[in-house]
Image (cartoon, rainbow, N blue to C red; front, top):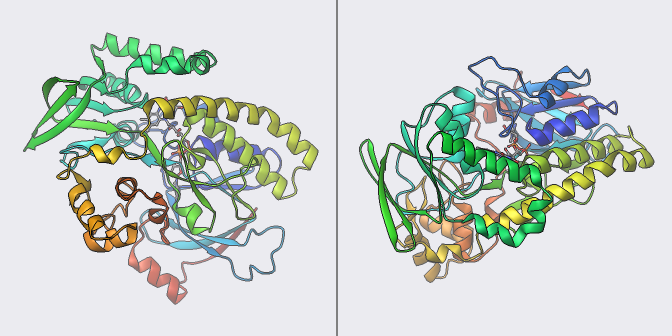
Amino acid sequence: MVGAGPAGLSAALAAAEHGVNVLVVDRGGKPGGQYLRQSTVRENTPPELIQRAERHENIRFLLRHEIWRATPSRGSSRLSRQECGQSLEVADVDGRTTRSLLPGAIVLATGAYDRVVPFPGWESPGVVTVGGAQAQLKGLGITVGRRVLVTGTGPLLLSLALSLAEAGVDVVAVADPVRPRAWLRHFSTVVRAPRKLWQAAAYRGRLWRHRVPVWSGWEVREITSDRDVMIAKLGCGTKERTEIVDAIAVGHGFTPQVELASALGCALLVDPRDGSPVAQVDADLRTSRAGVFAAGELTGVGGADAAYATGALAGLAAARHLGRLDETAYQVASKPWRRRAAAARRFADALHEVHGFAPGWSTRVADDTVLCRCEGVTFGEVRAVQALGADDPRAVKLLTRAGMGRCQGRLCGLSSADVLGCAPLAYAHRPIATPVPLRLLMAEDLGSQDQMEEVHE
Ligand SMILES: Cc1cc2nc3c(=O)[nH]c(=O)nc-3n(C[C@H](O)[C@H](O)[C@H](O)COP(=O)(O)OP(=O)(O)OC[C@H]3O[C@@H](n4cnc5c(N)ncnc54)[C@H](O)[C@@H]3O)c2cc1C
């Protein structure tokens, strides 16, 4: 399993319970992923899913390790049942050693990263993503500022604002352009998910007790920063207000982390709900590569419930692939998870409709707004080279450097694709899934002593 979030853990348990020996690799110091993130600086009782996985005799964890590359394994033309023809290169996060894993089946549950729709000033220091702010708070106990505005769109803004307020931060407000009445169109979906309704009401109630207002219909128009002071100009129609803060947490949902799926040669698709690249899977969570399965956000952003359900389905399908489950047993075991996955999907579809962006959203962004934060390239610069005839992401990259920085298009790829009116798949292919020191690449070529091969089911 690659990823120890809800999808990876759920897949690990489903496969392990049918006798599969599972290795779970995650770059984090503790299992949990985004939703079940645990503090790495404080002792705490892990959530039940993590406890079950940690106690299971067939599950082993390899934490603080990243899969940085996937290659066809040697002799992949003559595969035994215990190989899926892929070798995964795993390095410790400090970049000291790398080695190969030869699994019989792979479940990719690599999750998603934050999506930010650019607005003037979003590149300023002090502007952090919602996921980043939550990761710092939950993982390290660090708050991003003393007086913080939480903005963007979606229910996760409420969750972050509450965590910050409970940690003693002065949360100015949660500003989201979407008004609750937008959910009326999805009344039948909402009443079939009373837990979500209750959760949203509970968040609002707890925020109210912390005196954190929720400004529905408001959005950030501009941020200016002068040393430690950040000035956020907000608007609601023609109404405007200005707030002085020292940090702004912004999030417009997530986009799946597809680089490993792409490196393994799995087919990718564009999710029509949000324009993000996703791994293409069938009803059994099989990707287009034999023996490689995908689950959770990687198959389309859908929240924790979808991640649990698709994870369990992928784990069961992997067990069937390895001959640990016959067809009848597989169908019986997977049935309840299919129902849960379908219900989660219905809710996620509504969420995308209410808080999503129709293609062409970038036409509303001014020319002088920064598109690529790493290289400081503006929307205007990308539009200028487009006017010269550069209409594919590669040409835009070469002419403007947009997408060439540290994030390699993870943050700006969707913006460039929207400006160009093309699919963002060109940004998804990164032969090296995660940055590693050159020393490791050289050690690879020289056949370093550090390397060894581990065969797993
Ligand atoms: C602030 C915040 C609040 C949220 N609140 C809610 C909520 O209230 N309700 C809800 O339904 N959802 C919520 N979510 C969304 C929820 O976190 C996700 O839907 C869920 O975590 C997805 O599970 P996953 O297993 O697919 O991915 P993740 O939980 O993201 O796990 C993916 C894991 O893969 C690992 N990984 C990725 N690539 C590699 C690699 N190459 N090598 C090794 N490891 C790798 C990562 O380290 C990570 O641990 C929230 C998210 C955030 C950020």
